[in-house]
Length: 99
Image (cartoon, rainbow, N blue to C red; front, side, top):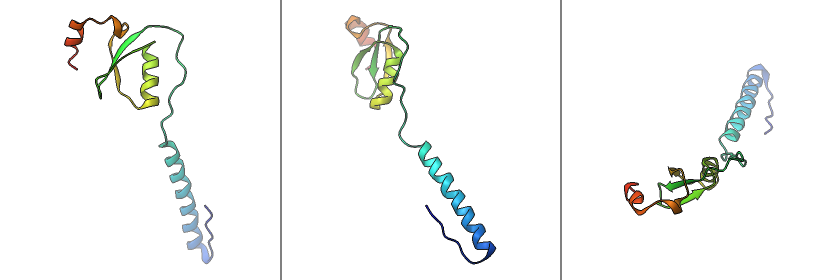
């Protein structure tokens, strides 16, 4: 953004301040832009079963890191309910999850 200033010291000072405010505002807007998600997780494979609290879906993830990455990328809210694949959770355990 270009600001043209003429007419004395007061106007120049106002223009300088406007230029600084514009720069600060653009930097603040850039930092509040789209959220950056991680795209790499450690090689460890510790399967977890997670529940999406918004829609009640269960899903197995290779690790808690992979789950967090998925949540960030797809704006989901999966939370770990078991330290194993969802396929190995019994019906009794499902009843206790309070879905």
